[in-house]
Length: 91
Image 1 (tube, rainbow, N blue to C red):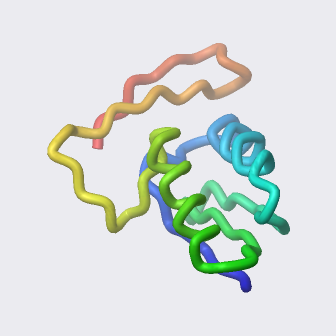
Image 2: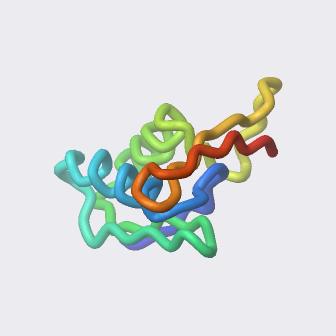
Image 3: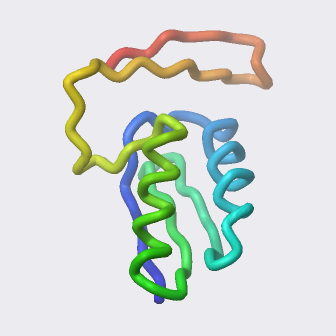
């Protein structure tokens, strides 16, 4: 089955590379794609539990679903231009 998760804090290509690298380690996930502009992570999974594992893994990595509510303000670092510029982004 194919699904997409819209996530928070996805701001650059380096974020997308990190997500792809980590989620590619999951054996039951395939056809992984990350759209930075839409903050969307798409993938094919084998069973419902696999999709939940991806959602939790994204949260642990700092990219929670837009439906995830936290009492802690989001703070992410964006490494644009190969790490040449460091920005603290608050949402």
